[in-house]
Image 1 (tube, rainbow, N blue to C red):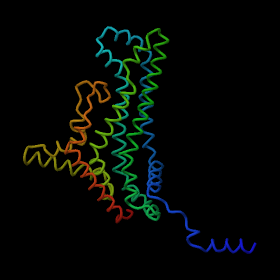
Image 2 (cartoon, rainbow, N blue to C red):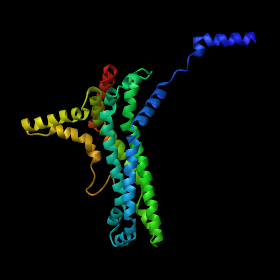
Image 3 (tube, rainbow, N blue to C red):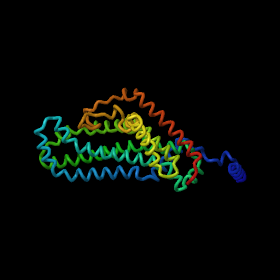
Image 4 (cartoon, rainbow, N blue to C red):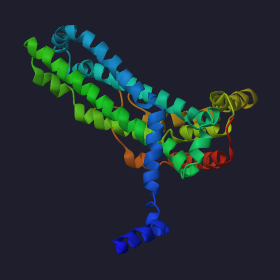
Length: 309
């Protein structure tokens, strides 16, 4: 008994025995990311709401689907494909638009909000570095939102496909013909490629700039993010009658050559020709990523020294 008591007493006063296990950087990033999802529920509520609107609108049109299929049978294969795939493209476009809006508004508020509500004092008291905090916030538009948008879009289009199949089967029409025109897996993979190239890598400087402004501005971060580029574009137009800076900014919104598609088509169209090698070898992409890295490094430094408002 005495030996056991002495061992317990020694382990209690031994600092190495009583110290908690070190938390790895990956675990800290994981919990910082959990914090972002907990504090910003619009990250997943907004895409789910957009999917609900798309499904509701589609279900209202199902009553006319048999009639549309009979009319589409008289069209050539390309027009028939476009007619059938149109609702699926519309749902994907709605969710992509939601992704862009949520991502940009999240970035412009991400670092300013914690200073405004003074929660930065609590979070800085925890053993989480500014680099980890900013990395968790960057992960939202770079990883979480595109993957979430892809998953919700796939689930939405799958429900649309199953509901359409049930209506067509009940009307005595061929479901196989309908499925042959809707390449759901291919459409989803093309959507994921489009999100990651055009709206993540191509638009990276936009997210970096918004996070930098969010870390710097004391108030009205959205205005500080928009007005300086707008002033430069206006001044260039007035002085030189050119729009080079506007074109430079425009490529980050449109994805450059990777965001160009034939008229009347969408990036999820099976006829879309992918050029990942050309995209990754574009100097503008790497210049944009270097600019993004500079913006994020400045945001990390600003957060280190910025206090609550």
